Length: 115
Length: 114
Image (cartoon, rainbow over all chains, first blue to last red):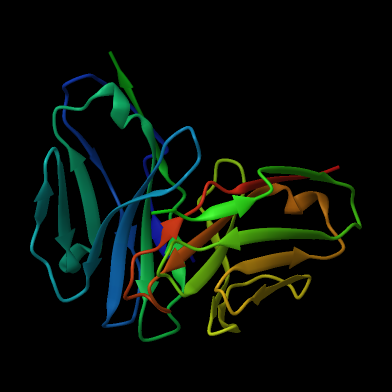
């Protein structure tokens, strides 16, 4: 079973629109971490955020914001006022602390921002 | 501050051959993880090295092996290459093992098996 599901394979938005990327995870661990990474066309994964399972506070960093809801096992990522430079593949990832510390990545959402 | 570096950038091998990929972690990091990323897919965890030992391993066959050196750099070895091993191989380093620390990724090595 997929531990991290990113149902949106591809999204296209027009510049300045807001966009939300969905991430649903599955774990039985009580202690785990969730991550978002950005992979631009150059290929190098860029770390965006880490959130542990005990901290459900939403976080905002500039145009980026994250909504963590344990009740629905979701960790969604919103880009406000999107820009062309936001075009990339975005990956959500899970690391389970109780059962082995492995990292599990979703299949990614390819975001295209149209000027 | 040098980030994670990997070599070579690209590699073409024939089925049945063996390959070695190299990774130097970010300065100050002592833990290295390896991932395989097939085209259009997310990275798949291969294994993680800390203190020169394999600490965690994903669902990969024994043809995939690794090594970590005293300077924390690491190698990934793949024996008896299959066409399905064609992928981008990513190395990531972190301040320690496990899930507590974020991982910093290198640019990857693109392996093509013909």
